[in-house]
Image (cartoon, rainbow, N blue to C red; front, side, top):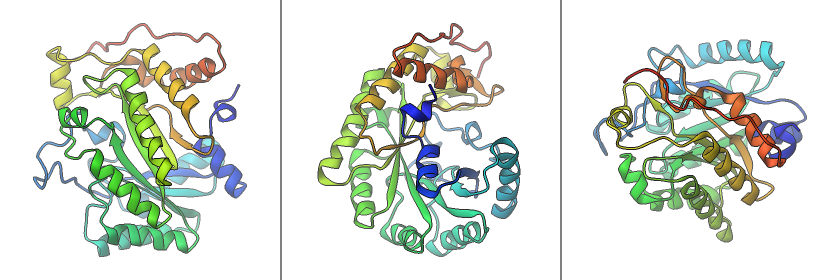
Length: 315
């Protein structure tokens, strides 16, 4: 069975809403982060190496050039002709409001870009930013505010040097909902010191906010992966923690999906890193292995496992 028949995926949701395929085009607009520039800390989160999810991280071209390059790839791969400009790398609301408006406007000037998806931290969404995003939504654009919570456990967030806690997330959610903005919450499964079921508990806490009509409308799940050049890699090499097993990740995802409100939109169910920077776990490089296993488990069917959980390389 196709995963989109079992889960309310982003692709399915967009198809039902608009009647055509909509894909995100990942963009790097050279933002930084208050946890890297000294405002809140230096060095960033222990797991942070944006090249693991932003291939243009070194010297990004213009937004327009990135959109053109992305659309060429997506058109050949899927035939999609409509896109969301996904401001992904680092903290994409952490700048002067006029500069943000210029960047977002540039993306929305592209005739096939129907909206924005803006990745950021819960502590970096002041009211003027939320008002700006709400204004685009009022103009008829598809707008998603993507908040990187990662865990609802403040101790876990402190351990990875996240620089914010649950309270900042709850405040951001409540202010976003006052403006009827769509929010997609990010959770990392398998943070140091957490079990798979701890991530399920984080999910439950996020969903419980729905009792006050402030729940997230979207969700992204991905496993903690250890990549070269990070503090996490050094901790891993010293044996200070172990990464989550393949079966444990599948179990957590399946349990979270089964607990989900039917209208919750899943923007992602796993995450990958380039083989040349990935240290562990090895199965993080196998996107379709993970997705197929989730689909099989949801259907109560056996799935192939992954034996080599540790890559043979060093940080």
